[in-house]
Amino acid sequence: MDKNRQIRKVLLLTLGLNAGVAAAKIVYGYLIGSISMTADGFHSFFDGASNIIGLVGIWIASRPPDENHAYGHKKYETLSTIAISVMMFLTAIEILKRVFQNLSGAKGPEVEAGGFAVMIVTLFVNICVSRYERKKGIELGSDFLVADAMHTKSDIYTTLTVIASLVGARMGFPAVDPVAAVFITFMIARMGFEILRSASAILTDAVAFDHDLICRAALGVEGVVDCHAVRTRGRKDHVLVDLHVSVRRDMPIGAAHDVAHAVCDRLKKTFPELADVVVHIEPQGHVEP
Image (cartoon, rainbow, N blue to C red; front, side, top):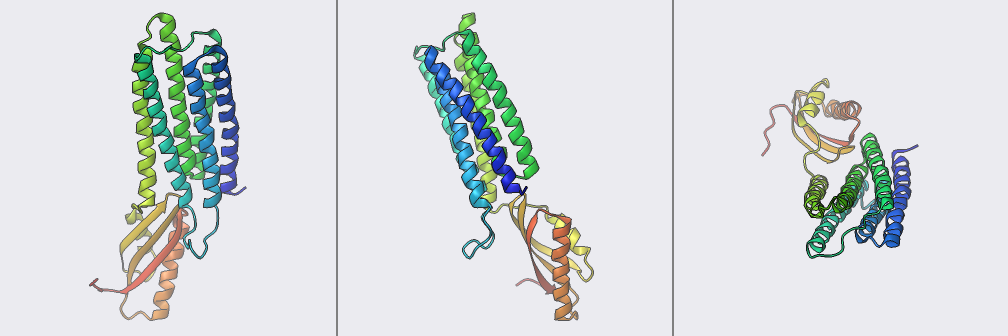
């Protein structure tokens, strides 16, 4: 099974689980008249929406290079992670709105045994989904799965907010809910910022690989006397590299060409994450203008 198919399989599984969690919260929230539980259910619904975004992003990213995208479509997956960070920021805003409503004297969450049961079960499901998605994201080198796992983790925090509200209300301390919610909002916004920063680094072609490691490998090829001007960009699992290597001034063009191919082959074999390598050959002692 290819990598993109495995990622789609993970997203479909988590989509089903997120839909079940959202339905449980929304339906039970309406039945007992709990505004906070219903709102949390709609937040879980956004988790499912992010899975759909991921499926579309992965589908586009899996397309091979074409005339207009010579380097492929991998960045579409990274682009889709930005949508996840936006959703997390919106989630943080919604929690702050809930805090304001609480301070304004709006009706708090219902204290029901059934409510505790629903929230605890859905909390357990969210924890399992977040850990599973993160594990698979790391294994498959998927930025989106890792980002979506963090988004699901934000759902865990909002669920804890509702549980804290229920516990606080039952113990006679309703102020616990707004205090916990403010802290959770900060954590969600921080995760959203981390996702956005990581995605932005890829989309703006930040350095993607250790240049010293590339030069060490290139210098191990017979005929190479120097390595410099290394540039890297791309995702961790799809790095594009170009570099300059120096050879003897009296080396025939054909031999220098063979050296360039040998450097390319050695780098790709040594570092599987390098998807494309461009080698520029220079005579020894050449000085850039």
